[in-house]
Image (tube, rainbow, N blue to C red):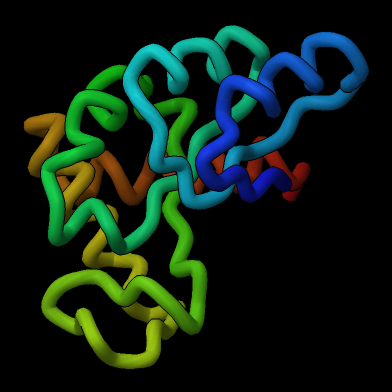
Length: 125
């Protein structure tokens, strides 16, 4: 589980040189190009509440296939709209899935199903 902040390029360089594992980039807030680089490396990308109140990451969401997406709350911070400014709770993760569905022009059910399948695959459950 990686949590990267303002260092996507540096982290990718370190992974390419040293890492032997795959995983997930938690709270991904990079560019579409950075998303593709992490996907090429085999990492899933997890999106958080920030998607619901800015359009800055729409191109990254669009670039990530549904079979490589997860959602996360990053509790207790960055609650999604309509809960922005409140303590973030795991139950709010559905708002992120709704936003991913909107950005990708697919149904919420399709996104939720993909996220569940991706989590099962990643965590071997």
